[in-house]
Length: 387
Image (cartoon, rainbow, N blue to C red):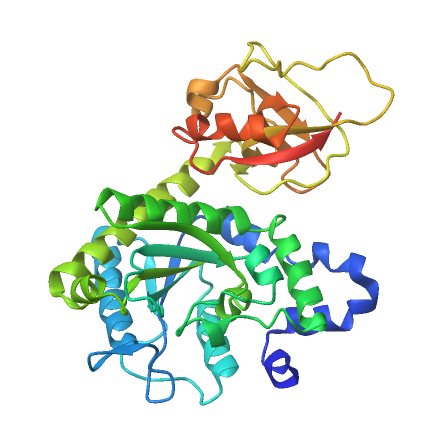
């Protein structure tokens, strides 16, 4: 634990020193929001594992590190060819490791991303499992589920187990959970959007969809930007192994990730609304100080118009589309099909105005509407507010 924490960036060292003042942990990290505000200029591709020290999973004489690198290089070439305005940074282009200590090796990859001011970090891995029948693709983002709350009992069999933060250590768990909570104020929603887009492109190719999963991975914890780790198939499954080691399969996988990146870039750029000196973008919610609602039509069954003034605050749910420094009209063309159906939630953050759809009494109701909203606003997410 001591060696592991010593190798993290100053932010995480600061979190350790602030353990006794837990409330101060949450507002410390604003870097990610600034990253997204400038658009996507630099994409960092991380070929997982590498070198003699960390080869990853191995089956039939094939090492995971080599598959990851081949796909990473193909993906980088696609971005450079088709998105020439974006700089591609590869954490490695040859078979190498950065340290003989795993935490230092993972930190070095994050440091490369930070050095180049990365706007998006994508780590490519191949999966493995005790059961050879398990197959498919999944994309991981930083977070914690009930699985990790049970001390990582079901950690992935080979390649991720040592790369997971040890949530059985109470001190580590407290720090990491504070960091995860802080993600909602920075770039967590962007990571989730990127992961969702990757999985959607995989599904279009007919791959077995294992979905987007949250795990407390060290390399994602160390990166201060939207970050995902995508598992392109199971080496332990003969069919998956054949596919991810073939030239055709690797090109197909790289193409799927590239198309997801292209959609992500388009979504972020579209969300950077320009209205004079105004820059608007999707960003996770902050606790509102003042609430202003503008509504001309009824968006859903539950009205988005304010109800009668209550004696006490009531927790409500809405779907946030984007946010801006300066107020723009709810009839703005970029609001597309929802123009006139959007209300504005005013907060105390830099991105003061949150553009929201719907006013729901519970999260389940909001969830039923979000997929339709995401057809025009893939970056949309559910927020809570008080009335």
